[in-house]
Amino acid sequence: MGVWQSYRLRVQRKRWRVRALRKRRELKVVADRTQQIRPEDILIFSTLRNERVRLPFFLRYYRAMGVSHFVFVDNDSTDGSLDYLADQNDVSVWHTRASYKKSRFGVDWLNWLQRKYGHGHWCLVVDPDEFLIYPFCDTRPLQALTDWLDASSIKSFSAMLLDMYPKEDLNEKPYQEGQDPFEIANWFDSGNYSYKKNKRFGNLWIQGGPRSRVFFRDKPEKAPALNKIPLVKWDRRYTYVSSTHMLLPRGLNQVYDEWGGEKASGILLHAKFLDSFNTKAAEELTRKQHYSASVEYRAYAETMRDDPELWCKWSEKYINWRQLEILGLMSKGNWA
Image: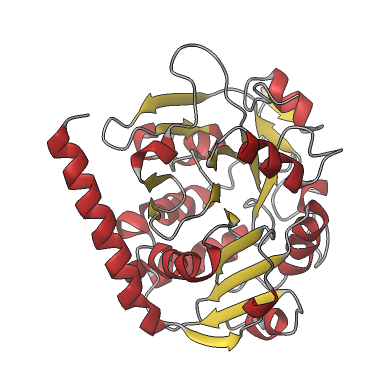
């Protein structure tokens, strides 16, 4: 990368940081327990709207993994999400009625909160329907991973988003509050993924899976990106650029080995496709607060009218992280 391009990226990073500083005015604190955060704590940062039914399992899952504190931005939920979060002893939550789209889809809000509370911590940025799987997660807590990353001088950890879906119709098994969503949505595409390098930011761009196969089959280049870098040893100088797809400084995006080896990586199991999917998609299409004039949600609405099947004969039933490693979807690298 040339000197001029490096300079432009530094300027852009500064601009995103200034933008986040301004956007902090849109956030109103509802419950601030950040004084409880200890220097060694692993933190979660998340934005949400109307995810009340998902929250009990989400919190239980990550607490068991070793997350010590949760920082949420509630974007004007109407289903009780805000009150529920405000009652949790390990949660700090802010509320806003401001535009999700004009905050760069929540990135500005979380960049500000991470700058203020995440500096020096391993921070995990996930949505309430995203569940991190990493090597040895069945026997080792998340801090074992972050300790190894620290010892290896690695500051960012990637995890491909893996869309999970049921074999049956989405409405056949209603999701119950507190339930493990992968009791219902326990199938995934084991292949059907494309990779290319983003030359400007240095990250991999991954597409595919059931959303490409079913909802964007005629225009796969428009399918949602599946590449994520959700776990970062945060520094107040850092900034996410587009969701958790890429960051600045640019070096944080180089979470893969260009020379044919393997770096440790994980998976974000994505529990999007439950019985609530149609209602959620219709709401978001109406709100028009998502990327590229909500092209993703228009595709969902148009395709769901035909009652499509996400399951196909090439679908694989989820077992554990070792299965995902064998399939080449994640790697333990040299972490033994």
